[in-house]
Image 1: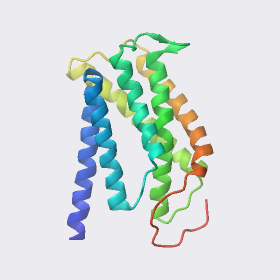
Image 2 (image 1 turned 30 degrees about the horizontal axis):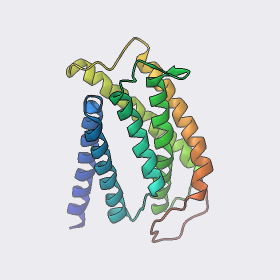
Image 3 (image 1 turned 30 degrees about the vertical axis):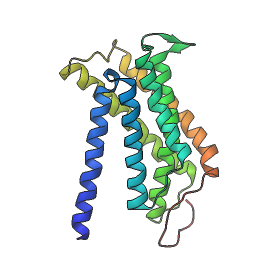
Length: 203
């Protein structure tokens, strides 16, 4: 029974990953209303899954930051801001930086929560390093999604020879800034988890 439950959980996580990837593939072509509703439902599913299965309660503030991050992209598409200047930079650059900045704190918080459940009490700084590598990997995967859209689905997501490198540059800036924010803020946000064994000393 435990093995079946574990297989179902892995299948559910894989399904959520595929749905999320498909959404990112077509998000820029969908309506603002659809994108907003989808993000709310996706985040709600993630919240209740982690709460019921792993006893991890994501703070509403962190969920709100992730929602805001995806709205930055959705609103940019809705108002056709991509390709336009936004202050001292292009909106595309602003979007990549802000999305990573707003999502990074929740990734760090979640990773720290999972590590604690496994009995590893890492400091926020060490968890931040691990999270930053994960975030940059996810940002790189998004650039691959843009490439797939361009090659196989007739999309127009790559605007020049330096587009991907520029996107990753601003992703990295956002991750660094998000990590700095997380190191300051997450010390003030407790983990609401149920740990069934004593925690070792902090590394």
